[in-house]
Amino acid sequence: MNPAIQYFKNIWDAIYTVSFGMIITLKYWVKEPPITIEYPDRLKKGPLILSGNSLEEIVSDRFRGYLTVDFSTCIGCLQCMITCPIDIIAIETEKRDDVRFITRFDINQSKCMYCGLCVEVCPTDAIVHSKRFEGACYDIKELCIRHVETAVPVAKRPSKGEAESA
Amino acid sequence: MAELVSQEMFLNMGPHHPSTHGVLRLIVQTDGEIMRRAVPDVGYLHRGIEKIAERVTYQGFMPYTDRIDYVSAFSGNLGYALTVERLAGIEVPEKAEYLRVIAAELARMGSHFIGFGAVLLDLGAVTPFVHALRERETYNDLMEMLCGARLTHNYARIGGVSHDLPEGFKEKTLKFIDHLEYEFIDEFNNLISFNSILVKRFANVGVVSAEKAIEYTLVGPNLRGSGVQFDLRRDDPYSIYDRFDFEIPVGKGKFGTVGDCYDRYWIRIQEIRESCRIIRQALEQMPEKGEIRTKIPKVFKPPKGEIYVRTECPRGEMGFYLISDGGKSPYRLKIRTGSFSAMSILEELSQGVMVADLVAIIGSFDIVAPEIDR
Ligand code: SF4
Ligand code: SF4
Image 1 (cartoon, chains in turn cyan, yellow):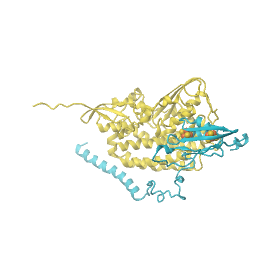
Image 2: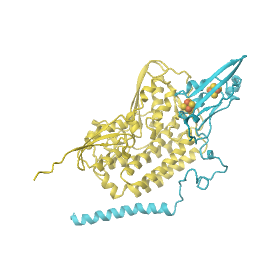
Image 3: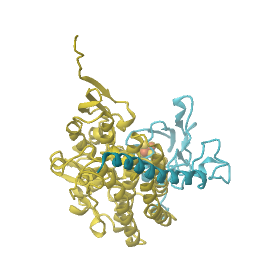
Image 4: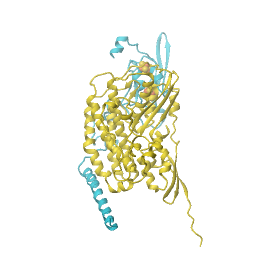
């Protein structure tokens, strides 16, 4: 092909194909509603309007957030501590007058990788993920959460039938 | 008058360079704008994952496989789970197999969004990256519904998967793949793929012939981009991939030579369509009810032996070589990944290209730095 024709054809090609892209960009600019939200200030105004006031509503039901422990069902079996691949759960139990007490239940949330393995092995579903995900704080030590302040007695081990139905 | 001498110069590209997709260092020898050589220096992201495997239990290693290739975390999960299952002879329930295929194909799409989005960003086109990321966001939401995490899913388990399908997942996924197949891909192609500026940057750049691709052990989309039709999902089927009907796109030199950057880019766009097809079939065929997990003992000890299992990940073949001495944790686990294979050819490809083309070449191989090092 004649070099001059080629030269102008190249320019035409570029303009032609770029304008295709520009039409799409224009469409998104003018027609489509914005899908991004400015976190956290605009959450309440954006497309994700929360019904209550808690941020936790924007995550799904199975969301793996901070770990919480329910001491009315925890039997102190230490399964979660053994299973955790990075050893961030520390539990200590103590026997006082034939009753076992949990004296320490620390979870270091700053190291936790939210894998969910501890939740899976817990026989009584005492340790679960909450939906909390905002964890910024000024001191990293605050993220090592002590779930036991004063010693709590362990719960009764559920009988076989109960455990299966649960 | 003394002549001006031109000298070759050694430069560092990376480790902290936006277009090396992570922490990858390239030692670049340039003569002006022309590249003489670029040698990748691997090792800035070494986390010792293989060594960690020797210290944690078989189940406890699963979350670490997320971090081999964090862009498509589930692919690592799947490969590792398959390895241990084959070694120990564990049967996986039917429904779990389907769930795995669905999650794996979603992961493939999610990874390709980042793959072709990021290479365009490297070339200076910011808008398409945002479009790709919008789709990635839906993928993240779907995975969050399915298993609770957005990036490091940890969804597979030895003997099955961790959760069943949540309510509304099927409809949402079908809507998503409809949107991809009928709207997104065509729109994206019009937006950028057929753009003649992009074609000029990509076509005939970084050409890898089929022989060379095999010589350098390229895998996955990079190998198929050179026109070699090889896909483990079809040629060495694992899980239940033999039940689905899908095509394997190969590079045909759409705008230039077979095996150039454009072909590798184009393969990824086409693979999204094929993944959509597989997901659609899997959702149709999947049994409504059924077990999702075979029970394995809490203290799990597979028999003595060794095994190598390879799976087709978004970045190519990921292989796990596992030696067990009958104990609680692996005796040795070696992981082979696709990005590492792509590193070897970089030195040869970079000879004589422009500096800006090197960015296109690295990007077109869809490298994820943590996968190179483990
Ligand atoms: S979620 Fe994983 S890392 Fe965190 S405490 Fe549980 S087992 Fe350990
Ligand atoms: S939280 Fe669950 S696994 Fe952990 S000690 Fe209590 S009962 Fe056992």
